[in-house]
Length: 250
Image (cartoon, rainbow, N blue to C red; front, side, top):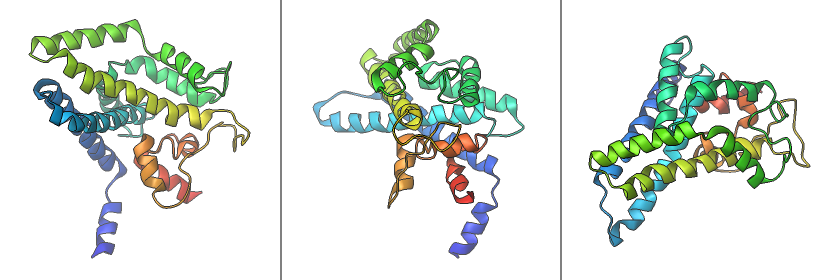
């Protein structure tokens, strides 16, 4: 029975699985976003649940960015560029009012020359330290236009009855924490220069380590874009959930 189930799952096209996973991430994110922002009541007894919701929403916010990232590479729904651009635009907008149109060419410049002065995600002046690199990264991608868009959405939510504290707790805080998570596990650690060097010209390393739970840690850290970052640069057209296959094929 289990063998037949595996065969049936493996026969499902990658595009269908990618879309199903993206739909699940978006649906879960929207449920927490709308429900918590508009219905959450702050009480002493509910504080632990609020912390849990913020943690889950942080991870799902990372997932929104990864969905957009797959769209940038054309790997979520190959051959359906309009669908991918629309979904990528929505995912980045929902996550933190980011511009998909602006981030798309920047990300492809990253892949063209990773870990070099031509890489917009790299800090050539300080390729080691976390904080200077993060400050440069933040300043490059977070714009006045984004702040205006976030403010307008927040004002709309408040006009519809949401409280500012809920907007901050369940949208702003997860977005900032997700940014840190994406930067640390998806950019800084994989591309940071160190004594171990890099395997090839991609200037990237994978972080998953070994032992039991390595794949789960990779999924929780950054939807495999930390654990399998070198594999992503070797095969940028591979969807996030398929990256472990790249390792098995090598």
